[in-house]
Length: 107
Image 1 (cartoon, rainbow, N blue to C red):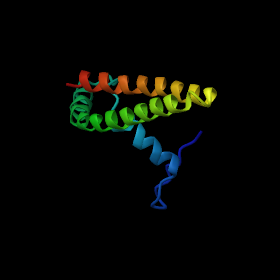
Image 2: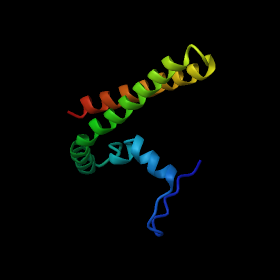
Image 3: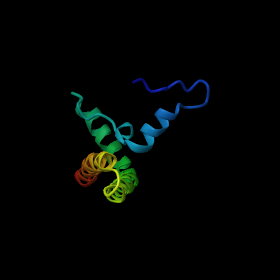
Image 4: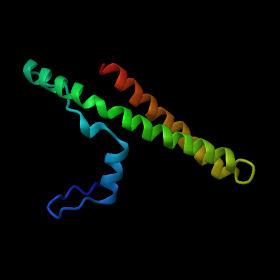
């Protein structure tokens, strides 16, 4: 799966936009560098970027609630579809937990 990152046309692909809407990894710089000055600069940059993590927490909390409610509503009639929604609820809860721990650890 390749994300469309061609910005010369002025538009981004839908998959790329959804990726940036749901995942926050693109906001942060990697701290695994050998130079202590670069590591300190990356850490300072990451500390400034942490203000955006609660937005992603809200997005994933909304997705988790949607998946749980959809699973509960579909459970009496369509068990397989309800199981799919409950599994996606479990996965989105894991991502939500990861975002929360990342936000707390950057404090």
